[in-house]
Length: 591
Ligand SMILES: Cc1cc2nc3c(=O)[nH]c(=O)nc-3n(C[C@H](O)[C@H](O)[C@H](O)COP(=O)(O)OP(=O)(O)OC[C@H]3O[C@@H](n4cnc5c(N)ncnc54)[C@H](O)[C@@H]3O)c2cc1C
Image (tube, rainbow, N blue to C red; front, top):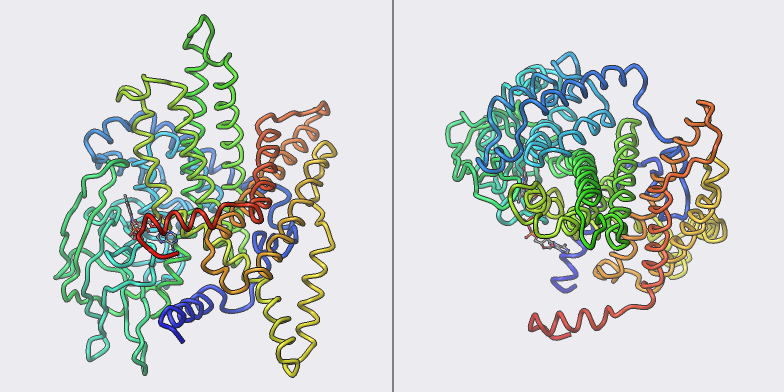
């Protein structure tokens, strides 16, 4: 076996252990790859329960008032700092412990409610929303999800008020996108009472202001020569904790403190281990699932701000004796932002609800949400910027800051390329396993025909059936039927790709990108349809029986369906060979 092949087999084995251990209910995204529409997870459109909605409305009103009075995004950007008074205020209005249990001083909100709070902050100041995410969405998430009662009792009360801040430290020089390559070492002490940590972390939000850091480090696996990643709670007062750079100067989200630190023989008590030893990578990925959900909420808030700014300008600025909004090329940009902002909100709500409803495996959905919302926001800011013309370029308007702030979104918490590949490969694994079952049996019939027969019938069943998309509003039936047909076509395309490429598909990222792109748009369209259906039903219940045209939803579905068809047809008609050859030639590699 070649070195490359051995490395791949190792990666496959690691991914299998990490992502697919134990039986899991079929989620929505995985269902799509099997040609199913698992309606229960997405319809009817989820709502925060009435009892929590009252509490949420109160919190949102307090948060809005606080932000109106005390949050100055321009000053935060210029001074490259979020004032302590703002952090304290965020703690007072509950934002730093929104989802923490009430018994530890949190608000006990579900993820859907948390997303509404984050959308509000994201609509105003990206530095502040990233700071809150670093502290609450990821910094203290491992403690919330995997901490013991004693650990929560000890650490959470000061963290949920903001008296102490949290951080999440995974990234290192050699472990960026390749998160499994963490090099920081954690050696057990001879008496087993503590671990001795050595190594460096970089690009860590809140590193120098946090009092509690969730740090991923490599521990020996007992009775073996292997190591695995374990999550530790580390505090900066531990001897050997050294901040190397407190605030790395940077392009955007300048208010956040992004730092580098070293641990030099830092003794961490074994009581500070979060979750099972050796399961740190799984913990990190779960934590990032939560981060990606609130990422979606923050991007939604920022996209709504783009829409507001674009509309204000297009309605007031005149050229050629017309307001800009009268030109179709400007209308096109505004329409696109409106349609995308509607979809981003719907997708955020549904993804958050999957967590709230206890779906065990929502990693494809959170990855889709992260990629979709960060890419759409980048477009939205670019479109709004263009509508403002030269004036957007100057620092008295928020758009130049928004451009700088938004650029990190496509890189942080899993770069969009890595997540795109992840969506396609994790999604295709299910149907791929069924094909493998069939192939293996054809090669070695002694393995038993029963399993292969079941897998074959399963594949065949999905291929002949167009799934039903159960909307309640008659006026949406046509969209629902189109969506069902596209899911059917998607499934056929996935099957074809698996049959045509087999295992080498693991390296064919241009194919993966189209499959992931189609899956993302299928998910986004589903969320839009579900939301629009709920709005129509709500209007009907309130006695409004006239036709309800939601232009943004209508446009989104039309554009999304067109994109899906394009992704699928490009699978067979493309310039991939020329793309790879050109890149190889530029890279100085032989094709
Ligand atoms: C402002 C800021 C704040 C951050 N905060 C935190 C934090 O709080 N905690 C934390 O742990 N980390 C944090 N990070 C780190 C962040 O998560 C990483 O930057 C990110 O994971 C990418 O790693 P990298 O920068 O090393 O890029 P690399 O891994 O070097 O990747 C560079 C590029 O290569 C491409 N690429 C890489 N791998 C693949 C692949 N398999 N297929 C195709 N393309 C690929 C992608 O385009 C990617 O953008 C932060 C980073 C920044 C800039």
